[in-house]
Amino acid sequence: MDVQPLSPVGEAAVSRFAELVFAHLGRTDQRRWARAYLQGLLAVPGRKSLANMAAGLATGPAAATVSLSLQQFINGSPWDWRPARRVLAELAAGPRAVRAWTAALVVVPRRGDQVVGVHRRFDPATGRTVKCQAASGLFVATDRDAVPVDWALLLDPSWTDDPQRRARARIPGDVGPRSAGELLVGMVDRLAAHHPVAPLVVGLDAAEDPVRLAAALAHRSVPYLLEVRGGQAVRPVLQATTGRHGRVHQEAVSAESLFPRRRPRTAADPQPVLRGTPVLPPGAAGAAPGAACGAVHRLWAQCDGDDGGQQRYWLTDLAEDAPVVLGLLDATSATRGTVDRLGADFGLLDFSGRSFTGWHHHMTLVSAAYALGRDLAVRGGGTSGSALRDSA
Image (cartoon, rainbow, N blue to C red; front, side, top):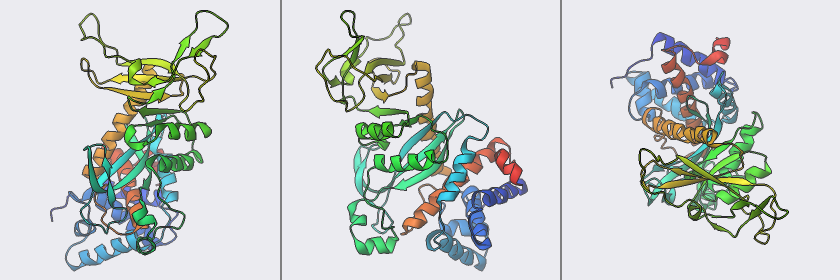
């Protein structure tokens, strides 16, 4: 197998980065195999299977030994992945300001039934029901990109309600069937426990029930920008011109009805990228139309740029203007780009183990490889951020 090795500078960066992110691992051999797995994810081209990475890290009979050791480290060893993810979240922004937290749903088609978490579900990207693994990811977005900092695997009752399957996959007793939105709230709680809260931008694929998700985030004082469907019921708010009330609300209508398609554009009449209107918070109890209202949200319509083209709808409790919202929406594009790169270059799609803990170990190392790889690319083989330089 033709493997392009890391440069000496790259190998040194991997070693320092592994020592920093996986310092909580109690044994020297665990930290050594974390470093080896990282190097395999970064240096081995193509599919990041254990056999391929082992062949890239060793030759001859030694490759089989390396493969077994990597297998034990990922799928057999019970090490805790959460401290490593906390370090990744600290390194994600570096000296840059955090623009937002973002979320993504990753659907990985699978053929067999033995890989942990495999079940049938609707895939929004293809519009089909597929047999797959599905995971919810949380990312820290800056003006440069979006870095994955936490993951949660979606498990349906075929896994959580089957004692034999639970035991074989080593699924913890407190893990049950939860929606992507519920898993996302748990990840937000973990991130907020250690970092300043940033606006959370969530597309439709990661929020099956945006109204319920909005309520959970509001309860936690996490500002949000959530995509909703065109048929989502909202209560528009109007500025009163007479009477005592400054603002009144109308009957509930669909989101899309508030933003009729514009006539075809002309050079003298360009179509705006965003249009917004005030609405009541989602799920707010309806007073009689015309009554005064309290807190006000905003609904934004985002056009794809084509005349009469498709619009996406975003609900937010942020009192920001269109340029700020556009900046936040750019973070969703950065997140999609990161997910694509994770799949193409860093092994996101390549876990085939049966262990719940093994999946979390693999995803943690995939995230670490991305965080280091982006800095190696930017710095031309240099180290990864000031914290990594300080640890050298």
